Length: 132
Image (cartoon, rainbow, N blue to C red):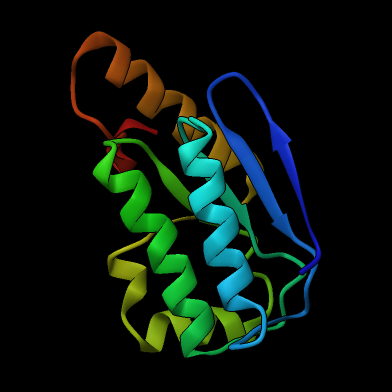
């Protein structure tokens, strides 16, 4: 599976380099998400701007990441939903109401920084859209 990870102090950006996130790639993504989580990555932004197709296995991998970071009360943010088929699948499956999705990487980083700030203050674990 092709991907890159850009680690910062408070978050990491996982950019998939795959056009297809399907049953052949999803197990590798799940494994990498577990590795990143266990390595202590506080917050994760997953950039899907290169991904043109996602199937149910791919959605399952994305939900694995969401669950891992939610359990540790940190942020898991999806961005880069630029391809209509990916955006439509997430909408049709109603995961847009479960996942934190930001239009741009810049918006995702702002969201994560706000969530981190709130965690450090002992407030809510996640920023809300009203905070932005």
